[in-house]
Amino acid sequence: MTARFHLSVPTTPPAAPARLPGFITDIRPQPKLREQRAVAHAARLTGLDGLYVPFDPAGLESLVVAGGLLREAAPLEVTAEFHPAIASPVYAAKLTASAQRFAASRLNWRLAVDLDPATARAHGDFLQEKDRYARAAEFLTVARGVWETRGYSHEGTFYQVLGGGFPVSRSGPRFPRIYLSGTSAAALALSQAHADVHIFTPGEDRGLRPAGVTVGLALPVLAREDDAEAAFAARRAGFDARPGAVTGSYERVAGALAEYAGQGIGEFFLRTPDPVTDGYLVGQHVLPLLQKETSHAG
Image 1 (tube, one colour):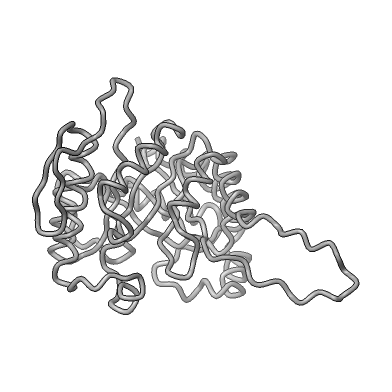
Image 2: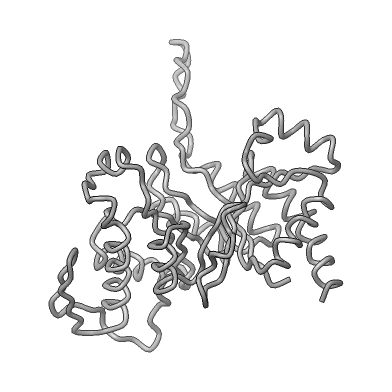
């Protein structure tokens, strides 16, 4: 089986605790990342390839969560999605190079380029929409430049660097794999120039694949022992209304994933109602069936 599978990790903070009666005095805080750690363990124990931490305006910072997960989920890769306005490309590269040394180069990037204007402004980014992809291209150019070239200089529209770059080392960490998405001409051109993987959602991939780039798919998935149980679980979780969701028995879901893999999908980003429970079910039951299907097809 050549396709790679990443499990999405929620970053929304836990709900505020209910008011406790006055006689209860043990109010020690619970770990904030308990669920994220449980997802990491599910993915690691069941043979998934990686974890994906999405950018969520209301959630925890994805790069911080990713840093914690890198410790919990070795040897899995962790992909953090963030907005280019989070920091300068030099600082983002330095932060990541530091993390790579502690985590055996397992941290990847996914850039969230197309934020809606209200979200972008709420995060202090007032760049015009037409300039976002140009800035993202320059961000990645500069980040790779300082990573790979000592004495690196750059004078561009959005960033300037003079005599930058990291010290050269024969054991230097790997530059993060770059994941991008989008269906506009600007999005596809950005991936053509900078991406390792371009991620579509179901129905988007209609002859738009950038040449020379691995194609990924962000896919809602819910698998259970049989179709009836899966349908009930999907209705209960409100999952049946998600566009493109794959739900059903382990065999049905494995067949759908095999069909996508046969169409050239090389990486899957699985979104599930309950990442812990569903992470175990997918890893323990669906992936072995998928491996059998693809080995028979080969």
